[in-house]
Amino acid sequence: MIEEKCMNNKSIKELYEGLNSGEFTSVELVKHCLDAIANNDQSGRCLNSIAEVEPNALFIAEALAQGTAKRSSHQAV
Image 1 (tube, rainbow, N blue to C red):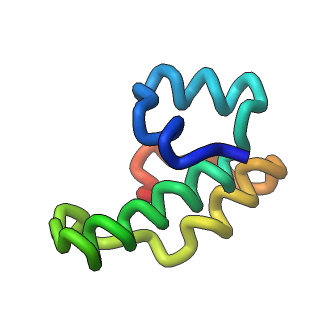
Image 2 (cartoon, rainbow, N blue to C red):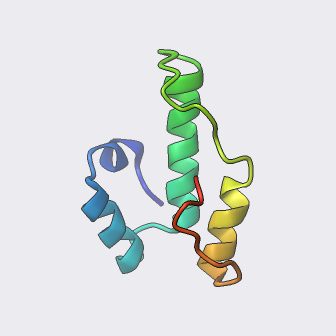
Image 3 (cartoon, helix red, strand yellow):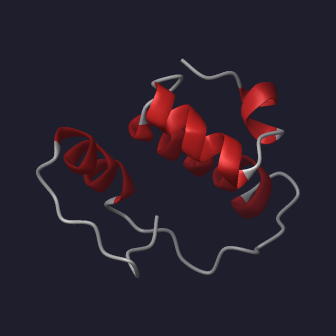
């Protein structure tokens, strides 16, 4: 399980490495990102920097983790 403070300070490279090493799962990463969007963008500070959140993001992350979905380079999370 990932800790929020730790996750917020990671670079894209570190997130990639964390996924590959098993430090956290893609589902945990997506949940963290969705929570951050909800807490900082859509409420809280109301940054409104995210125009749209993929409604199936968790489903997609779970499917990719299980190898049952094809990756798309333009698929948003």
